[in-house]
Length: 148
Image 1: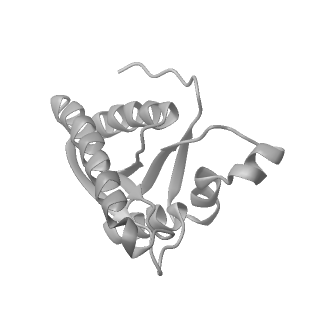
Image 2: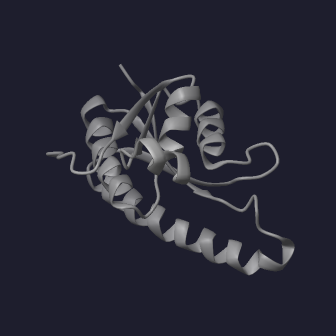
């Protein structure tokens, strides 16, 4: 069914739940799993290079932790840190670009489930990825239970 699953990961609780889903799914399907963190540097000026470095270091720690968890279950896992920029100015753009580059068949990511004004004010990475993705997208909402 799916042999290449891309997981968009950040430090949110819903992303952590999405990671559990993605690992379980990759394990069950014997699929390769690519874990991606996006460092949103599109708006940072050159003077904020240190901030970008710290964000990348935090992303690496998060990815390493989840990669080790997936490896314990025998999942073929790789990681990537991608940055927003001219070609990919928004986080959703960066996720979709990495999914295309890696030839993902499924993207898994957490969604806070906001709608209406909350979504309008905060935007929705999950909505943008689901709306414009070229492959299937699995959205994991807060409280979704997963048995491994």
